[in-house]
Amino acid sequence: MRRRVVVVIFDGFQLLDLAGPVDVFETASLFAQEGGYRVEVAAVRVGAVAAHGGIAIDAAIALREVEGPVDTLLVLGGLKIPDCVDDRELVEQIARLAHVSRRVASVCTGAFLLAEAGLLNGRRATTHWMAAADLGHRYPATTVDANPIYIRDGEVWTSAGVTAGIDLTLALVAEDHGHALARKVARGLVVYLHRPGGQDQFSTPMRAGTPRTEPLRELQAFIDANPADDLSVPALARRAGMSERHFSRIFTNQTGVSPGRYVERSRADAARRLLESTGHPLDRIASLSGLGTPETLYRVFRRHWRISPGDYRRRFQTQEN
Image 1: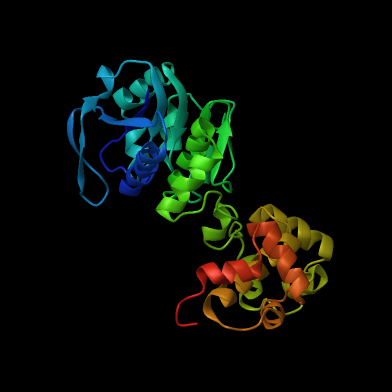
Image 2: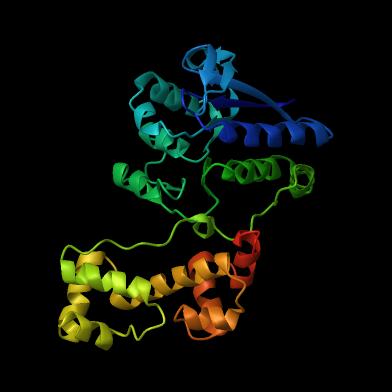
């Protein structure tokens, strides 16, 4: 018996959110000695559904016509998710089908549709790092963690941005057929079975809030532009013309992080840019970024991105360097 997978698409869905998981399921079916998967693509209406970028995919069945049982209900993401959560029929059909599905999963911003359908209430979930704050704000009953590549909470699975749908689907295959088959599928598709590190390694610099007052905005810009300077609380308080206690309180209140935490983030981002754009050795990177030593550089990278500076450079350094 093949496991039935129903994939939910909508106008503006992310094409890679569909292609990645479907290729994993189909490759697993090819390699499996028995069973495998039968993938059905469904939408609110039967017919062509345009992905972001205009490529049309045929939805062979309308969601209202899908009857259980379903093994896996997989909801995709896309840039038009804010519009999609207002599509009552789409959300109601996802909620209905969740009750006849053994498990429910989302790729990227598909988590918004699961949350709108009430499926993430009281659960931990993830989504694309750029959308994580918005998901948490819109759906406070959901505990949002922006770093993991995927999260399982009971029989509800959510994944991070775009290609993380491949990681998620490999985990589903491993649950169904064992890690040996999942590993074979990963090798066949030339991807990691367990991707090292989390989603944070792909995100833009870790920004705190922008201060409301001009002196602190200028000080924030100074910190970012001069990571190797003395950025201790006493030095920053003198530059701001405040007592250390008052400065720490005001800075934390206006940015959401303490001065020390902000300085570490700023220096970590400076180090990351240097790793991407230069061939400097790690001791030079540590010095220029204000982190001091390669040991501190390593600890900061492990703390923020769960990978080493060397691994980060190998993945993200531009070709010409």
